[in-house]
Length: 205
Image 1 (cartoon, helix red, strand yellow):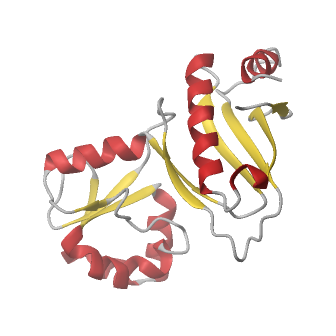
Image 2 (cartoon, one colour):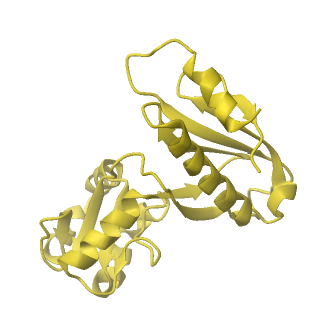
């Protein structure tokens, strides 16, 4: 089934009291989860939602919730750290603070996959334009980590136009295939669904 047809079918399902998320499911084969590390970041042509971001900065910013170096000690307790990680989707940091960020927050941010990264979150220069550019990039990006032999990735909202969801699906699909060790050989099948619907199998070229 083509993506367009599948979306038309999914839209016939009964309305829910909330806006459902469109999800792309990429089922994989011949993947060794211990050996094959599949992590990638993909830029979406059409952002789905604004992310909650926190910055480790030398001074407070009007653009983003900020934790300055003087406040690092406040997060020495595990409970405070865990709450911090739970409350934000992404973290950014001034490059010069990264060693201290790693030693103070790394043990919790690392396993959660939320450490500021050079691709998406480390600021070589700390100023408002650099922070704004990073936030814009984060809001249009998805970070994907393989934890099981199947990727389930949000690609849109029910209220978005079909063509916007399709463009997001194509971007995510090709980024995922590129990140796989054996590319298309690792692909079993692809499906799409809304939050409360059954998945439908689709062909993506």
